[in-house]
Length: 80
Image (cartoon, rainbow, N blue to C red; front, side, top):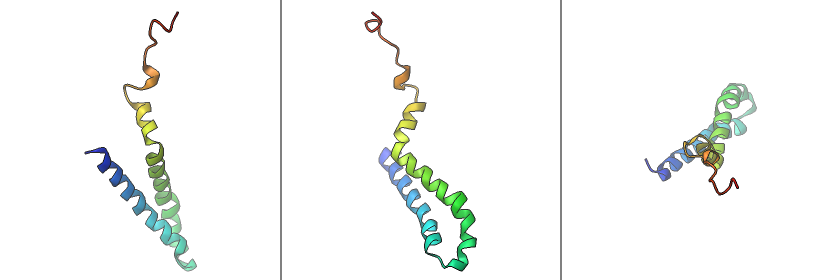
């Protein structure tokens, strides 16, 4: 799977998670207790995590990759 396909899937997932939140905001006041739990504890946290992943996911990948910059050995010239 190419990186552009992964980005497209993540963007669609993020947009789909926003739909129940919009329904919660614009629903009649009588229906709010029905939507409050799932919106607060499922949809909103997943929306935030997917947004953060789109924003800073490359840093998380670099942190957990085998060839991260912090693991590069110091050359002998830098030791002098």
